[in-house]
Image 1 (tube, rainbow, N blue to C red):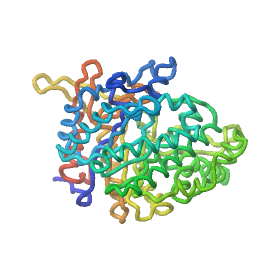
Image 2 (image 1 turned 180 degrees about the vertical axis):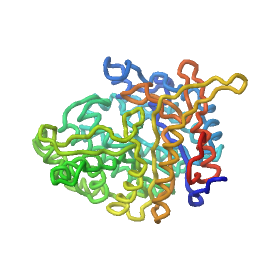
Image 3 (image 1 turned 180 degrees about the horizontal axis):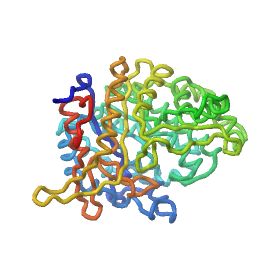
Image 4 (image 1 turned 30 degrees about the vertical axis):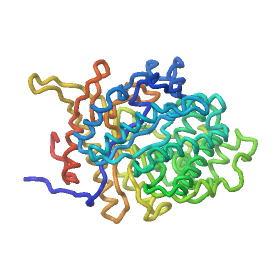
Length: 461
Ligand code: FCB
């Protein structure tokens, strides 16, 4: 008996995603400047086993091979980011060799019939800008607009989909609040400023893109969480509201409603801020400039309850569902609930993309003699199947989901976790830089070629 098929709409876009610092390596090549991630990862004690992106997947030197890998997977679109310090290695200095690398990448995608999707900022701020305050300094906004304008001039006619920022939550709150990402600052006042400037730079770049009247579309990628209260009690529901403002609404409300939510202002930021004078008149109108699509990165859910002695009285419960290697609960239904909620409360008929979804598991390579090597990553196959299913449910209800980018094309440098977490469809042997298709890559090839999934996942898929 063959299982029945669940098909996606014609033209649904299937992609994979990566980011520059996580895969490129070649950090000293072709005049590239230092980024905050070079700086941070070379600061002892910040990254798992003090690893760095110095070599990563050596993608900078293996571009053609990796383009062939994308072609072999059968993806219709590829989401990658441009490294700002390759383009502006120093203040006022433009590096042509950096531009040329991305031109080769974009041309190589077109030659293989793959649509480029460019993330302008995926966290690798030039260190020279950090030395002037980074995202806490409002002048960084102008530099970002200058950088984006240059990309639009160079690649505007070649790239149909642009993402201003990847996950401003991480840039601002992990980078400047919790300090676990570059630049490693622990100051919630700085985090509020950084978030505001990142959002402002997003709005100004969207305006600039539309002013130039380019043919493509532009949006932003947010990491959103499905937040649940541990119980129906009023205190637990209050904790969930706060967690929701923290994880989701700080960005959704400002981008789609032109305002910041209240609870978080009082609960987290106000004790660290003299005042909000960095939010100037007109800023929120700029931040809420209409976009052409919203990108959503979905990985997990958060369950919280009220607890007196926790910061903001919010306690995050430990996982009760099976988790990935990141410790993140596997909850595909949360993707459906999140998409539905975002559509109802914020985006209506605006096109949506899942710009990241995927899972880290401990993968092992099996030697099969003459048949070569394999990686039997059954959990990842199940994870993806069930999340595709959840996305399809949203689409069947009329939800405007247009495409799906799996994180990630290949194993790579997972920020503070270094190389200890493997998210790839393709296994990377870092000692040899060999790429090995995992079973999940073969599963994804079938999904793409059939534009759908089996209703029930067949064993050993
Ligand atoms: C997201 C990041 C991406 C990757 C995944 C696992 O937060 O955008 O670079 O690290 O998580």
